[in-house]
Image (cartoon, rainbow over all chains, first blue to last red; front, side, top):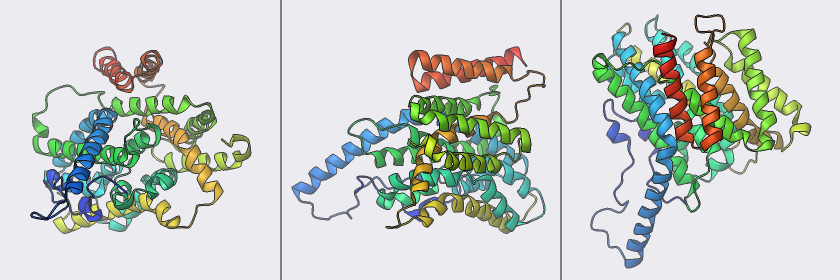
Amino acid sequence: MSLLPEPEAGQASGCPAGGVRDCRPARESPLPAGTFMRRGDIMTEKVRAAARSAALRAAFPATIPVLTGFACLGIAYGILMDSKGYGPQWSILMSAVGFCGSMQYVAITLLTAAFDPLQAFFLSFMVNARHLFYGLSMLEEYRGAGKLRPFLVYVLCDETFSIVSTEEPPEGVDPTAFRFWVSLLDYLYWVGATALGGLLGGFITFNTAGMDFALTALFVVLFLEQWKKPENRPAGVIGIGATVVSLLVFGPDRLVIPAMVLIAVILLGGRNRLCT
Amino acid sequence: MYLTPVQTLLIILAVAAGAQLTRWLPFLLFSGNRRPPAAVTYLGKALPPAVMGLLVVYCLRNVSLTGSSHGIPEALAIAAVAVLHRWRGNVLLSIAGGTAVYMLLVQLVFA
């Protein structure tokens, strides 16, 4: 049972362009105005509110690196879309509904070529195929997430997965609530940054070159966090080795799928020896 | 704009559908009381460290060792992240420090 307000599954996709604020779940009590509340209900409501803010307080610091990285990449995305003639309403819609980082950059080429939605669908499936791994890893954790599950799955991106799969919420914080806030904050950062880029992209003069390294640094740190547990080390080495081999063989533009296949094959093949 | 608004909307929906399928497929395959096979449970545990390795290499995929900077800014910045993380063990400090080192290197030294 979750202590949080539940965002509806359709909320993310039904998000109106330009209305980032509207994507947030309602903070009000789920009870309609005038509903008779017994003393016990008021107490539960207080306890719930306290649990909610504790989870948010734990989640926010964990997402600050994502805020930095998404601010750069999201603003850059909004600017780029604008420069191709797709104003903020389109870049925000793509970020809010599509929410798939690197594929959104790839999709710019699809938006500036002959209309081919089927190709867009297959390309998006291929480029995002790594999410299959994230779902497999979070099967158990998200099974118990109840009504929050549709939202958690909808926005399960690289950055959110790295945090929820690596960082444990502090003692006393509901893990589902922690994962919910990490997911929601990351989602809002991306959509918000896209809106900023689309709306005032032309006015940014600060030299932001290299700022997107924050995401590389985030993955390096989370790799090191995984490395702390000796039983994770073989899989970590396999992940780096298989991806480097795949990069050398297939080149930078199509390395992800071969790397995933190679990782899965090696992990499954060495299962008896690697078994944790 | 190269496409009409309706075409643009359809491309956005197609991209979203492709991405969502990758996110939902594992949950659809192993939903309800159908327990995933032992191999899948094992993969679920072994994949996070492997995927972090994949993502690190993926972020660095366009770094050219023969290019003008020979990947030195990336190597130094990652070393800074690792040293900071070993020293203080503070996630935010490690990331901020590494990013600052990288920005200084690409903007001032290897510009």
